[in-house]
Image 1 (cartoon, helix red, strand yellow):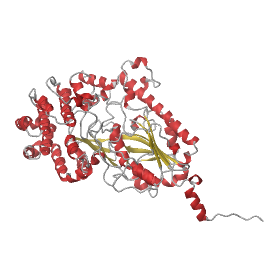
Image 2 (image 1 turned 135 degrees about the vertical axis):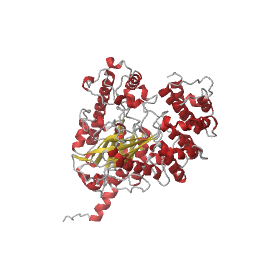
Image 3 (image 1 turned 90 degrees about the horizontal axis):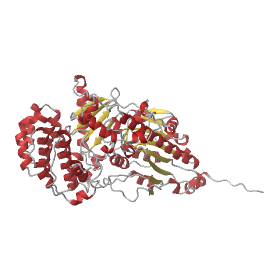
Image 4 (image 1 turned 90 degrees about the vertical axis):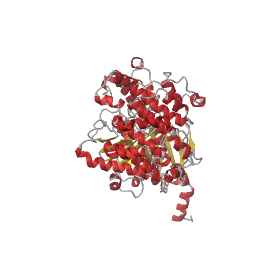
Length: 618
């Protein structure tokens, strides 16, 4: 007589745990990341955008997020935000390219480490580009050969696959390419946005960029087919997103929507549908941010989300649709991009976007060597110089307003600043206050000039920020004097220009430059500061004011630059010289400047790039 063989429930449960191939208890998660893509160039989002059938098919079985934001409009800062789940200006990771790597905040690791703790195999193919020191426990594999296929049988995985074909460098072609390198997209069918000149070069550049989107889509389709061939598609949650905004002139590197508003499609298979409050084919209007991506992956994987992260999950067990859909605000940041310095912050709430330009006298179109390798960029500037642009097209090369507010639904390209309209006064005040609170609360380390931050705070940025939180708050208040009428702040500004703290003097002079010629009563004092102040960076800002609005002593910048003690300090000084060159036509004699040869040896360094530009040796 045969004996029956029955396994108890407990035995089955144990077998499922010790033999992973029997069942997978956690979903695989894949990020498909295209470089340099805002949502404005995809047919999925915008009429006339590029057709991307594989992503569109993914959307039919997934969720299209209408409001997904890279909080920085450039690679390294965006990816530092993603991997840490933290605001980059809070942790010192906001500069592209970094002068030095910063450590992760105390008691926090890059989020894939927490996935590995709960059994995930974590792989990245292949771009990292973090401004943060990377520990050894982040990835099982990270290279252009990294693959989830090397995991144990049945082991859940998190895999990042990067696609480079839409990167900015793909548009660094010669002018002759218009006749020698035809595009699949007919340039005659492309229509440049209102802020771009409608020229054959711009139409051709748009067509090339559309073609690049098509190439990316084919690569993504092939990767999804690989998941299906491996028999794991039904176990895998797929994210597709762009790592920040697009690369057509005036997008990448700028806080306009075209620089930070990215496509995001997430497909959750039927097996794991309980992890998403959205049905297949749905659209989501709640705002999701790059600081939220890491926490979301951890939530989907059933791992604990560290409280030290700034973001919050938008998918995963226990999250309701109403809560996610109620989110309607995002904070974004833009600082130095290569050799081009700036300090811009924004808050978007619902349909309205508030942008704070802390150095409004700096033009968007300031020389950045890598940007101007694009023929369309060069043509745009030449058309400006010849007075051949419309007012909307010329904005890129003119000083900006200290603050701007846009209705991005009615004005998607942010061309009509509503800040002076009486009916927007209440909204303007609310958004201004929200941004002030945000930069003070973190606090925002960019209010400390980068050379000082590098020398004082690079080893522990978060604690450095906390120790200087009150001081940073005061600097924010000084910077915001430029938002009030000059007559109202004149006495306070006069006092601050003589403050003992050099950083207070530094920001007071920036405020004077923001007021421009209106600050003429302080011109003599600023001239003395430029010649005699004990702090080199204060002298720099005073010289910058003189160069923009008064007469500049011929050798003043030569003397200031010669006294630079670090490469970062020299880079900041050279940025002001480039600004004067671009907006005032100022020329500088470098024959008597003896810069550290190590700063010039690397032709990609910020110092060597600026010197090459200012000496016409590009």
